Every structure is written in C-alpha cells, then in structure tokens.
Amino acid sequence: MNRIFLIFLLVYFSLSLSAQPAGKVVLLYTNDIHSRVTGFGPESYYSPVTVNDDKTTGGFARIASVIENEKKQNTGTTLVLDAGDFLMGTLFQHLEPGTGFQLPLMKRMGYDVVCIGNHEFDYGPEKLAEIITSSSKKGELPAILLSNAVFSKKDIKDDSLEELFSKNSILRKYVIERDGIKFGFFSLMGKVADENAAYAPPVEFSKQIAAAKKMVKELKKEGCDVIICLSHSGIDKDKDGGWKGEDVELAQKVKGIDVIISGHTHTQLDKPLMINGVPIVQSGDYGRNVGRLELSFEKGSIKITDGRLIPVDDRISGNTDINSRIEEQKRIVDNEILKPLGMEYGKSIAESDFLLVCDEQGDVEGSNLGPFVADAIHKYVNRHSESGTDVSMVATGVIREKILPGPQTAPDIFRVMSMGSGKDKVPGYPLARVYVTGKELKSILEILNVAWKSTPANYCYFSGIRVETNPDGGLLKKIKKVEIFKGDGSSHAVDFSRKNKTLFAITANSYMLEFIGIIKKMSFGLINVTPKDSAGNRIADMSFAVIDMDSSKDGIQEGKEWLALIEYLQSMKDTNGNGVPDIDSKYRNAIRTHFPVSSE
Image (cartoon, rainbow, N blue to C red):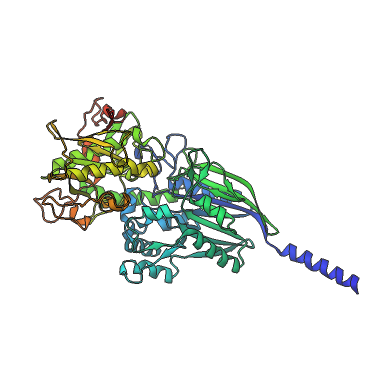
C-alpha cells in the first residue's frame, strides 16, 4: 500500500512540475521617446526607408522594424513596453488632443503596455484625458498604466481623467497570459517626476514604495508568474560613480518585483543594473535604442540570459506602413501649424557648422545653447513688446534638444523648446514677464545660484545682465553686483537697497516663472519675492503675466520661445553665400553672464 502511495506521489509531483509554465521571454522596451516619430537628428537628413545614407538615429518606422524582426526571430514570448514620457517633444504632440495619432500608431508598431510619465501631463489632466479619448476612437491602444495616481475629491479638473480609470481606459494594473506564463504589470510616477509635473494637479501621486508593495501583493494574488514594474522614476550616479536613485531604492525595498523598466532620467544602460537580484533597465531617450532583456522562465524561477541595447540607426530599413502614416501626419502638421506661421515643414531656415548643446547631466555652466536661447528671447521680446524686458532667462530643464550641425528646419528648432501650450493655436508655453525690485532681483539670483547644485535642471542662463559673485560669500550672500544692459550698449548697476522701489522686468516662459512665487519655500522662509505687474501690483495668477506681442490686435498675441529662436536665426548673416543664414560663430563657446570676483 505504501509503495503504491509513493508511486502516486511521484507521479503527482512530476505532473505538477511539468504543468508549470516555462519558456523564453524577451522584453523589448523604450522610455522617454517624447514623440520622436521622425528620429533624432536634423529633420532634412532623416530617410528611414533607405539604409546607409544618413546619420540620424531613432524614428518610429525603424523602431517598428526592430520590433517586427525581434518577434520573428524569438521562439518564445515577446512583449513590448514603454516606461513613460512617450508624448511631448515635437510638433506632432500639439495635434494629439484632436488627432489621437501616436498611441494607435504605437499599438500598430507592436507596443503592448505603456505607462504615463510626467510629460504626459504637460497640457494638464483634462487634455491628457482628451488625448486618450481621441486616440481610442482611432484604433486599438496599448494598455496604459498609472498605478499611484490620487484624484481630488473636490476639484473637478481631474474628473475626466478619473473617469478613464473607471472605464479601464487607463489601468492601475494589467495582467496578460502568454504561452502559459501570466505577466502582471504596474507603473509608478516617481517623486522627482511628480515634482516636474507642474500641470498634473489636482492629480497627485502616492508614495511609490507603498504603492509598489500594494500592487505586488495584488498581482501575486492573481497568480502572476512574472511581475514587471514600469517606473517613471529613474536612476543616476552618485559622486563616487555608484548607482543611486528612486528605482534603485525600489529594488532594495520592495520584494516580488521581477523586472524594473525604468524611465524619466534618460539614462542609457547598456546592460541591466542588478540590485538585490532585480534587473533595472533603461534605454536612453528619443528612441535611439530599443532595449532587449531576455529571460528564461522555468519551474517558477526567472533567469536573465541576455540584456543589451539595439541601436536604432540607418542600418535599419524602416517599416513602410508606419512611415507612410507619419508622412500623412506631417502634412497635417504643416497645414495646421507651420503654414499659418509662414513656414514649411522641410524648408531650411538656418544652418550650423558646430554643435550647440545644453546637457542637464553634463557641464551646464559650459553650455553654448543656453545663452543662445536666452539671447533669442531677449531680442524677440524687446522687438515685439512695447514695454520690452530688462532680463531674459531660461532654465536647463526646459531646453529639450541640441542643435546638431547641418541645416535647421522649423521642426528641428521647435524640438529645442518644445514644452507646453498656451491659449492660442500655436504650440509652446507663452512668454511671460514679471516685475521685481532690485533687492528681489538679487534674491532670485541668490536662490538660483544655489538651487542648481542639487538639481541641474534649475541652472539658468540670462541675457541683458552681468552678475559678479563672491564664491566665498555666505548663504544667500554671494551676489555682489548686478548690471543691466540696454539695447544701445549702455548699462547701469542695480541698487539692492530696500528703499529702492525701481522695478525690473524679468522674462521667461510662463512655466518657468511659476517658481518665483515659491522662492519663500525654496529658501526656507528666508526670502520672499512678490511677482508684480508694471504698476507694482501683485500677480497671483501667472496667466496675467503673459506678454502681448502685438498690442494692435485684439486679445493677447502670445510669444513663444521657439518662434523667438527662429526669428533670431533668420536675422543672422549668410556667411557662406548659399542663401541660408548661419548661426553666429560667437556661440561656438559659452557666453557667460556670471563672473567670480575676489572678496577683497
């Protein structure tokens, strides 16, 4: 009897083990592609359906081919994922609320799951809901995730987005079964990404560690064999070259996550970063690489068998169907955005024989692009606005693209300053102007002199100003002298005394000027700056600070940074005689406005 029972047990356990799912799993992933449907590089060079004839990288047609080829070659399960910020970065984004173009295109390319990042909120929660609703009418979408969103019970501005959760158009978790393996997905908006999502409120985001533990528990209950987190949080290096960041902490503190597909920090990991046995992967940005993580799943055990990046470059022949759909959308962009502004999609407006760059992760102080943008804004506002401006400024974090050597088209220049929208039909945050006293101007400069050390995105470039600093000065006591320069080349020093009530105009985009109102918080109560209008009245709502670029017309004629750049470029000389203006060679190197001086 015992012998028969033992045989029964052996057969039972043998059948149980053989019934467990097993197989090869390939995860293809991207992050921070920012609507780069036509690749990375001068627009006029991009030729996705032919090979070996340009140096551009990325592009949705090429990414589609990578996905298609991988699916053909892989014998097991292939899943295609994106870790957020798939929108916002090109002219295509501006039409999304009406055309719902990109998400159905990504599904057609082969994407299974995408998550929402901070830049999906650039137009606010109502517009994000509008984009997803419009997209759903145009075709099937990838599963869209956001697990730690918290909606307001009082404010109605997030109701339309909350409704999409109730309809399962956006999911907090997603479970699919492929080849006998049950995959569970959830996503997180990280703390820093939350701070960067200035227009997400009233939507808030719960703490990611607690949210992750809750999601893992729920997915385990649903019998998931593999749990994957799409985390728009990120990783970066510490001062000693080691890895740190929110996704490192996630892997350390939350058990049960098998893979973290990371985003937000635009980090290129050539191979998986292993933390507590959990692979963290990130592909860089702008679709220049597709990540490939290969797993072996057997008897409930997951092993990494390969992890690498697939370069998306001109060696890849792009998918012709995807490319034709993009070409049609380009025609719509041309007709609805550029032609009303007197521009054409593929027409060169300037050219450069050197690189202009602003690298948030690199030498922000040595940037040549930051000062170029600040100068363009300064000239634009002083030309078109009767009141002009004393100081123009731009932060590293809102400069989204390099200017690569070669011919520059309007889409190329838009990508440099591509964030946001205003109340007109032209994409981009509107330029705004506030007035402050000399003492307040000094306070702003003091805060900015410190803020960027912990957050390089806060490093600012200026035009119209010269600042002398004492590096040895105490906290908020480093600014020694500020000079304002006028258009005729004259200058005068700013009086910092409390009795001086002279007001100085500061111009930046409306998104960036929002920070002036929270300087008191940033300085832990030590400094308070009150943004004012030209009459000295407090400005409570930054929409009232938007500059009218043509007072002869009814309403507010908004100015945009990218239009300032184009106008500035077109004002430059054609040095090589080919009929196209060349970027002034003075911008080959950084133009500085802050100069250290001796404390003596």
